[in-house]
Length: 263
Image (cartoon, rainbow, N blue to C red; front, top):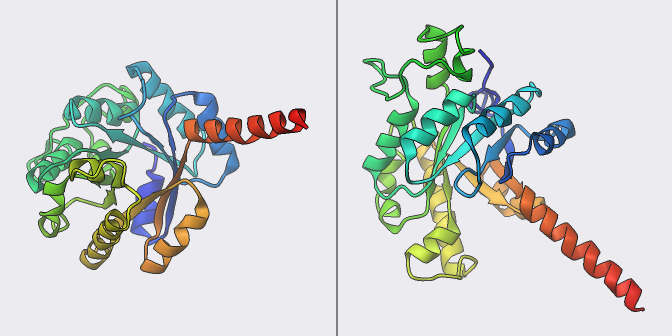
C-alpha cells in the first residue's frame, strides 16, 4: 500500500507544507503536483461539492506524485460516512471540523482507526482503493495504514477551547488548527476574525499545543504571513485555496487591463 508522506514527515520531525482545493479537478491536482513544492493537498470537503467517484479520482491524481499525500476536511455530519469513504478512496489523512467537546474528538479518532481490540476503532474491512480493492482486505498492512493516518481537528468552538488541556492530552491526536472565522461567529463576534482578540486567542492555542507536544497547523493566503508563526515554533502550514487564487488573479489582472484601456 502507498506510503503516507505526511506521516513520514511528522515522524521525522520535519515541516509540512500543504495547499487546499475546493474543486475536485484532477487537472488542478496534477498542476499542483508538477510544482513539486507541496507535501500534501487538502480537499476541503466541508466546502466542496463532490461525489464518491470524484473522491477516488482525486486520490488517484495525488497518487501520481510520490512526494505528495492528501487530506480530507470532514464536516460535522455525517462524519463517519465521509471519513470511511475518504479513507476508502485512498485519502489517508483526516481533518475534522466543528468539534464541540473532548469526547467528540475521541470519537473522531475512533472513526479513523481500525476495528481491532487494541485500537477500538470503527473502520472494518472494505473492498475499496485503500486495500487495492482485493489485495489487502483486513490485512496487517491495512491496519497499519489506518494507524498511520494523520488526525487533525479544527479548534473553532468556544466549548472546545475551554477543554483544550484535555483535548491536547488525547492519545492519537496529531495536529490542531485554530479556526478564527468560526470561532469569531461562535463567540458572537461575526466578521471580527482579524481582531486583536481573536488573533491573540489563536496564538494562545498554538502556544498551548506546542507545550503539550501536539503539532499546530496554520492556514495562510500569503507565505510572508508565516514569519510570525515560524518564530513561535510552528512548522506546519497549509496555504492557498484554488478558488481564491483564481478570484484574486481575475481581480488583479482584470482591473489592471481595464485601467490601461481607460487611459
